Amino acid sequence: MTIVRFAPSPTGRIHIGNARTAILNWLMACKTGGQFVLRYDDTDTARSTQAFAEGIATDLDWLGINPHRIEWQSKRFAHYDEVSNRLRAAGRLYPCYETADELDRRRKRQMARGAPPVYDRAALKLTDDEKRALETEGRKPHWRFKLDGRMVQWNDLIRGAQAIDTTGLSDPVLVREDGSYLYTLPSVIDDIDFAITHVIRGEDHVVNTAVQIEITQALGGNVPNYAHHSLLTGADGKGLSKRLGSLSIASMREGGLEPMAVVSHAALLGTSDNIHPCADYAELVEGFDLDKLSRAPARFDEAELSQLNAKLLHHLPWDAVKDRLPSASEEFWLAIRGNIAKLAEAADWEKVVLGPVAPVIAPEDHGFISEARGLLPASPWDGTTWKNWTEAVKAATGRKGKALFMPLRLALTGLDHGPELAQLLPLIGRERVLERLMAN
Ligand code: GLU
Image 1 (cartoon, protein in one colour):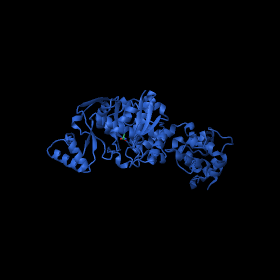
Image 2 (image 1 turned 60 degrees about the vertical axis):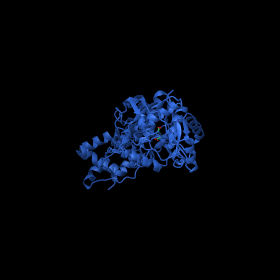
Image 3 (image 1 turned 45 degrees about the vertical axis):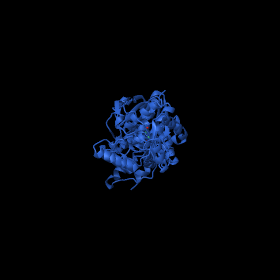
Image 4 (image 1 turned 120 degrees about the vertical axis):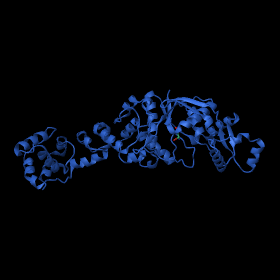
């Protein structure tokens, strides 16, 4: 069975970039009938909060993602301790005593010599006595993973054949001086323990992958499939990081966007498919294929998302919105959906139907309007009433086209634009129409 995971750190809310990762994983799970694990990467206990974790759960729920399983790294420290002890015993995790300053000076010296700033493994040469002496000085070790130093290769499901030579990398620190874990090791342990088959994440993790494959193998685990998608940039081609607040899923929800507009946009952005609105996941799942994802950065443009939101609404069936428009009817929805960019605007049209509206009647149209009023058909009204009425008005007044329709629209709605009057007229109803046509 395919098992994927989405692993946010609850140190903030998710934005469109993380949401895209979550959605791609969700689509993978749906496509394969597999499972989606939500894993909170909360090893940084100082910065992770329950409130952010709850916020992320709310955001995922709004996006229509329902994890099959939820895990918290902060509940697994004892297990990470056990596994790291195994790595220590196998000689793959070794203690280092350099301070950050010492490491920094060492890197600068290497760079001045034109050498790559790779950790020189000086700590591996320490004798037991030297280690004891350093510890008596009050130093505590941090722990590095001893890389094999080889070409790590994998067939990335988006980027194709990948090869990273880990001789060019510093042995990564997995455990800090205070015993806390950096992200690298817990992630590998969890991917093994939760039998993750596919790791779909951003390409900022490509180098981590080489390291994580080595660690997975050192632990005797199965190496999952990896797929690294390109990152989003803003419309200006630059990274999104500076404007993350406005691009958070929470702000999109609060701004009145439809979740499926956000989902459709995020799912299709940077793929070979056209970006178009999907009313539910079914069509996205059907068309989902990692092969369609481009390696080039994908541009995210808020204006395009707004347009997609409007397009989605324009075709959304009544059933999809009726719970959110409790005072409206299907006829009303079908009449106005083509004229809104956000669902909240339905309330503006409800007001146009129910009133009060301030009819606009130009002085030169007063005669025309009162003649039209006299020709109003009797109730009951239906979808043909507007046509019958305006044909009668046209025959009586000789007006046609804009000169015929615009004064009626302005008088009936107070606006020079809006939904088809053929659909609006029966909703406004004869009584209100009579009243509006009388206004002076
Ligand atoms: N917590 C990591 C991040 O948000 C997870 C990366 C991963 O998917 O392994 O970058």
